[in-house]
Image (tube, rainbow, N blue to C red; front, side):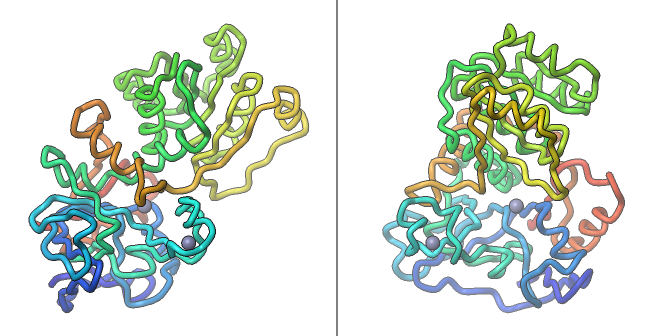
Length: 350
Ligand SMILES: [Zn+2]
Ligand SMILES: [Zn+2]
């Protein structure tokens, strides 16, 4: 089969390699679409790969082409359209036994610790396979992960409807967080971002209010929207200082503030901001990945069902560009130009 094999920093080669065959408990998937994740970029461009040579790619969809022995219990069929959850938890540690698979420390991961989907075929544990509703296009099937991450954050902090919700940052994770909060019963939904284009999209998916957080006076106006009482749930999806500060401002008394976004720079806050945590007695929580029992979890099955019934919307703008697998190296070069990539890049096989 053809595969994009990473041999070193910036050394991505299209090669002919042996097609993997599914072992016991494994499924062979013919890959149709595979997204380039933000985490793949440093693996290719900055030496962040665990080893070489490796085939990356963990956000993908395709067709089940074969099943190894001992797959009966998963109810899969050859020919089914499918996506797969990339985490391979150990299933034995205390965290896994509690169903907190995202917290497993002995995990493997498709496309970073074992070969992934930037290839014509990939083998994955059958347990990880999520059959796709046939109405879902392959490209959408490869975009499940951000939705599952968002839903995990919403559920993980014990979200209950009937409260005002603020979503800070309207990138891909914010986009899905806002939708899940709305679908699960947010009273009023306010979205914050610095891009007018993104804010327009927020209105389209049903945000009651979309605030440009780079404009002075935003926190006051946004608090006024809740008649001064603050938001019952605040989801921070940007992983940035401003958004973190805003989260502390917007939280109501006894609110839940959940950090879904990951930071790549220091976050700093002064004592006045810190005091808001005391004075409002809000709960600050974090969220990591997207798994729950039974593995891989409701995050995955709900994404499938809600995409199929049309209640979860996947806007065309999330997909920035597609390339044939053969041009994978060219796709990765785009990430070298600052600001050139505006959305997901997908590698396609015919
Ligand atoms: Zn990813
Ligand atoms: Zn484990």
